[in-house]
Length: 141
Image (tube, rainbow, N blue to C red):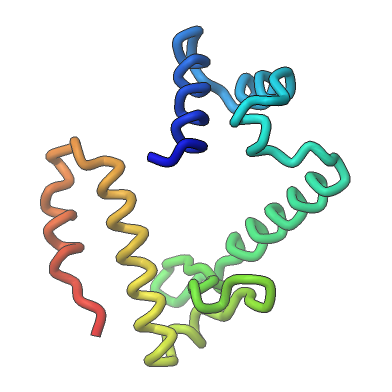
């Protein structure tokens, strides 16, 4: 673990000793301890922080749009494949992503990476062993 990550983990552990960690407690502690590793993780310029939060809200809004198909299932309209992220990137219609062999492969690889991370988080749940096996069997062509 890198030094910065270790310092952040140590500060969070110190907070955990005193009770449940909440985002409010973390921000309050970081605000009071300007030389801490946690303090450096936050944007303290309120104008910049407000802008970043509005961007976060816009991302949430974009991905929350769904359409209900004839089969009765709701599906997300816009997705952000890893290749379309960054300053010049954005969101694409799911139909366009699934209709392009290249984008579909990239989107599948992204989905599998996300599934692996989720399964790693819940690795101690033996009830998910079958899901882990199924994810390992899927191959990106």
